Amino acid sequence: SADLKLLEEATIAVCKSLVEKNPRTGNLGSLIKVFLSRTKELKISAECQNHLFIWQAHNALFIICCLLKVFISQMSEEELQLHLTYEEKA
Image (cartoon, rainbow, N blue to C red):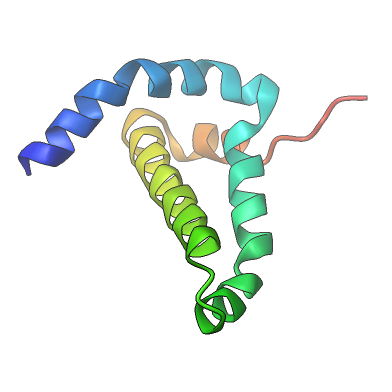
């Protein structure tokens, strides 16, 4: 859709920067790990009508989806695996 095209055009510089820096920073993997660790709280938040937490989880998932779309379209499976399996160096 037109909105998706506008979003991709507006975020291309940020995505390119993340693709370049992520092997050193591990930011994408960290975002995914945090999101997954907090998913257990989503049901409780929905029951308690904690709209702020639900909104934050929705936004994190949206960012993850957008970034993965860029990563998948621009790199091989092996490169993608390296980006998702960052290990801090001693």
